[in-house]
Image 1 (cartoon, rainbow, N blue to C red):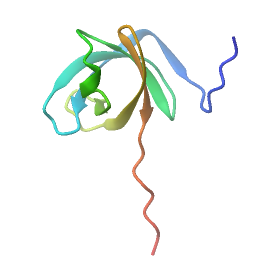
Image 2 (image 1 turned 45 degrees about the vertical axis):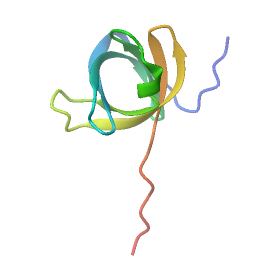
Image 3 (image 1 turned 180 degrees about the vertical axis):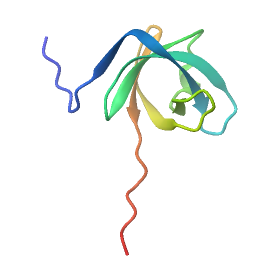
Length: 94
């Protein structure tokens, strides 16, 4: 089955441990990055999945949170989710 993705994905054979954090900082949970592209990623969620809290969140790419991507939930399949990376609007030049 051919996939019609805009961006090619990089698959991580063993997965990469990450953390997710609420936009307002009220929750954080462990997850595993399974694959990623410029536009999104597939994650495996560790522990029970509560979709209401996952509509929009930060994916922390570093252990101390200095590198992150803002994400929006696209799909859910068991303990795996697909997310789209949200980009900040481009600022117009002077």
